[in-house]
Length: 251
Image 1 (cartoon, one colour):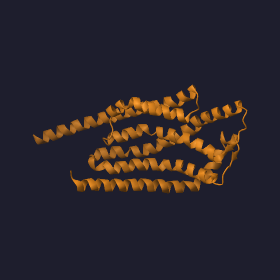
Image 2: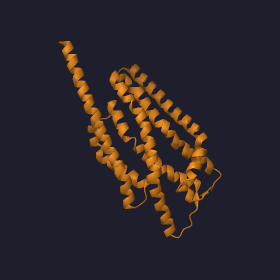
Image 3: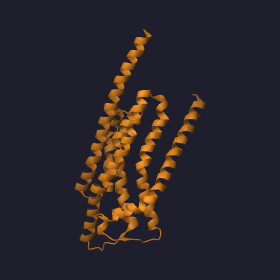
Image 4: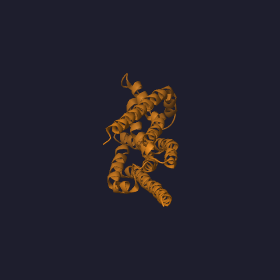
């Protein structure tokens, strides 16, 4: 084993992890400057506009800023993390593979925005409606703490948004030769169980809601397998042509 090369890789990996953490913190701090405007926007729209937010602790306002800023920072942090992964492994890729893998970074940015929209406008209202209906049926008074409301919101929006990254992450990691459709196929049963478990945790405890969230998750996984297969087959064809050229040159 070449220990100097091993240490060099570890040093570079540590540097990449440092930059990922730094960008996450900087983007989170930057997001805090816009958190107030985002809060006012969310408060003006259902279901938030239908309830009264209460502060049950002096730290509730700080908690909200942290919750929301961390969620907003993902818009920058997730694509940047993919960029750092690409930078770490690009030395082992050919020039055409480097350029092809780099193209997935802006797609990751677009998908996480779509995931946010789907989670907030589709999944979250469904979950909130179920919980409020249950509260009314039990004859309870609806008094919501702002910290609890946004904790409930982020616990739904963040996992759903990240799930929308599955296809591009699968393509990206396949292009980097870290993943392939065979591995994804073998992981299918475990992946289904994990995705269904997450869907059950973030959706109301009723069969229809579980299905409504689980099905998109599973579809996203299958799309990920399909996209990985497309990238993998293209890689195989390019490698076959490359080997043919090398053999022809050797002759």
